[in-house]
Image (cartoon, rainbow, N blue to C red; front, top):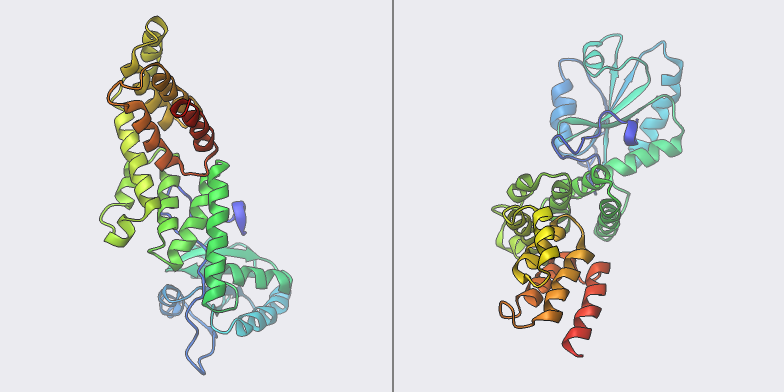
Length: 324
């Protein structure tokens, strides 16, 4: 059930959580990561414990042949995970209510709980290699702080690629996974806010970045997102872009309207067009609004980032104007 068909993954439209944690705290020395549970103890053994580290629940029955194949594999891999996850086994013949509440219709079924909620899962007697991949995704790979930092960096890079490709849900899940492990990760916070903006939830993005500690609030990436939100709010007050285009068609030298249109096109994601409008004003009248078109273009660059293709292209054009 991993991936897009997994009903336990959090959706972008709901509460943004994640299915992965990085480097969960190891179990206490001598404590077994495997135990049986009952309906009465499920809340303590699974819900409460999953707030400390991921907990896998193995729903099985004595008559189930595939269960007898899977359970030893689960126990082996969980033991070798050295406390990154725990395994709780529930006999559904003796305790059917929890499985019924979760909509489990066939066994074996393994559901992973993270932060008190079902987060991921699979059904059937899958191979040991898949069990290992599943546990690594939940508990993070075995290794120290350097490994964890490297994995987080890789996840952030993948999330950025997904967001740039328009996969908002996929990016949000990965940014959320990082925030689960590191709630004050500035890149993940900024990335999650960008996902909200891309989904048309600008107010939600602003709330997510409100009241941050000073060290986070001053992060360049987070400040860029806040500026982007300010630009969105400003563009909403600038009028109808169709009417502005009509005005420019009859009066191409109306620099005020052209700068307004540039701001609107920017928040629409039409960065090249936005830059070209400002560059047009600069070519015609550098003195307008005390070189306001150039100042506005530099504000765009701050939000777009130095490596954005639109920034690179516009900088070349800007240089040709400034030094011609």
